[in-house]
Image (cartoon, rainbow, N blue to C red):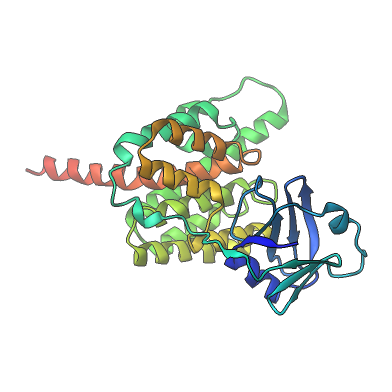
Length: 312
């Protein structure tokens, strides 16, 4: 079997990792985690790439899931082959896949004026009501008349998360890295799942920073977010936060950047819907974080402009 593409993060994880186990598996991907929370994904073309992915033509599920239970299922041999459950994958011809979208191309084009409202409208129309899309669509969060305590608890959690998101927005507007780190820490680990909603929102926010700020400032702020967050969540989510702090993303975010650069409204809408459909709320939460960052500087600058005009 031959590898088609491999992300640098996959090589890094395989070099350093040990004690691997299957985290999840389906027809198009098998995801692994090691004893330190490192991630690795074996995918075929339909699952698409991510920061920790290796793409092959087909996934040998019978080998992966039928191996010896006490054996380490992943063994890297001289960086030329990966042995999975006794089956070897040749890595010598694998193309190196860059997990960073062309973030720096976005500030050069005036996409916000045409597409930001379209992305927000798509979030409002398609995001699950329990997602953090409410941060960019506040009117969608309404008090329920239900007497079910589980419903009220969910609303309280959503309200707390929304407040934490808005706090992050205010601190990003100020550019104060210390305040940004405090606000990020309040969001980290908030919500259930392997990647809690608060973490997904922070991941999207970091993508927003990489796509809107000069590299040194984006690097400083994303590092502040990551440093304050990774110790407050689970190891799997921490790995995704660390990748986002480097600007690394799954292939769907590459699609969004490409769609914005192409200035294609239909394509932007379709890609946003695909992002929103990732996980239960993960994609919607991340897209909301991305949008929040692009709203924040515009709102902040408009406030400053209004103040300056009032002083004239």
